[in-house]
Image (cartoon, rainbow, N blue to C red):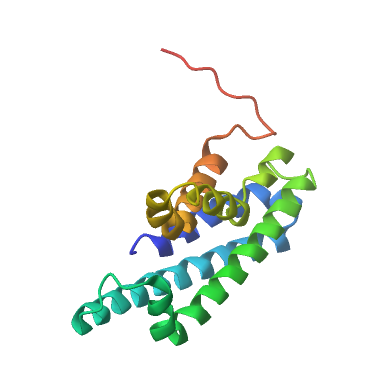
Length: 165
């Protein structure tokens, strides 16, 4: 939970790499990612409080839909805001990369957080056990994959450096 606000650092690096596609878009991607990290931290904090409150009530392990029914007034607005921030930021990132004037190859547009969350969410439905663990973690896993890809994948404006022993 404490590391999620640090997503801003990852989005700063991404914004630097797409800045040649437009400073305004890069700034927007950074600010949306930074805001998403802050809201994501709040989501985790509220979720922790919900789990604690349910334990105090003796309702721990309850049906997730029942939990949303009891605490949706707190969780749903945060989830909605977070969804908007991720989707808008992902669209801006993907459009900038598809434009071809960023440091990323165009195929990197597909590696955006919103699409990665959707793919991981679909993958999670393969089994109940996978769904129980991957589905709630999908946004976090998607961001780990996104930041790893934008950091490790060779960029379009340079050759991959040879590995030397």
